[in-house]
Length: 411
Figure 1 (cartoon, rainbow, N blue to C red):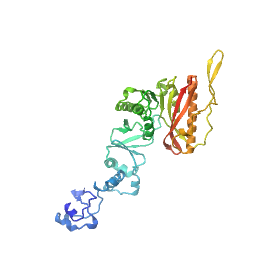
Figure 2: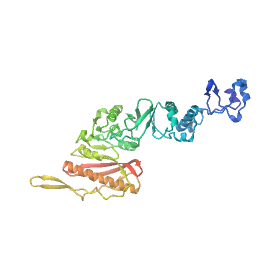
Figure 3: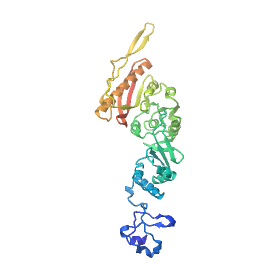
Figure 4: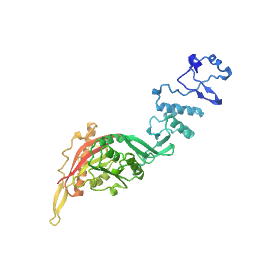
């Protein structure tokens, strides 16, 4: 190496490589190559001049070498080594992005479809793992629409699907082959973390692995949380996460349908973190609120802006019987009522047309919730829209929103 460097023909951008018959491939600069330089250390018949791809050295443009380029170079080398031809089609079949969960890399379905990868199988996957500096690999397809929203994930390297990650200083662990982890909800987790719930009891109706339960307990400082979840795999992860974050003593977990297991008359605040709609949980949330003081509902939904503006939803009259013998009734709610406190400023982000749609959805939801509360408790309630939070664009013309709705009984 010193002789090559001294004579200016050493290619420091490439590494040595062992080839067939224990020979060593030495990287040299072709423009400066002189065979006589090597005659001082080797006899001429031991030297073979050839052209081959050599791996880049660690010093070569480290900053410019992305994980994707390293993956491509390594797989290209494997394909050529196996006697197959590298092509543009194979290059286009490689992933350009992926999720990393600790030492596990998760690819989206749609890559590695070529029969070449099927033939190379485990050898190919091992090269992928080495290139991306991970120990486990998995591929996911669409979420299973089985009520649990179970991910369809298969491990291709490794046999343990449990991962752990830190999100806003909170620790979460879950089995990636059985549970969802929504990275897109991070803005809502950060927003909830700023709430002061120090004297509040919170009900989390769709708790999952604790996406919102844990922030309520750790950052918002909730006094107590009742977490409802019907997926046993998610409940297993939720209980682990409560322990990881040392808040298990301030939370009760209810396994089962929240319409059957959710406690009533306990909540100052109810979280309904289910999309595309949490409407089936609205009656449960109303029952969970403290009957004498009410509280806040945080209602998630996917709202489409494709449809034309609908007419304002109408209230039907709600009466309560005050004297059954005289058949006297008091009107609690009528179509003349509306959410006077509502304004366009309640909606975050979005263009003007989208905000109109979001506002209309919020007002419709507020009216429906108010009607439920009046019928449930047979006394008048108010619902006040405080805020509409835009979480993310879920699909073209479909937005994931959260409505902050204050619900209070009138004396």
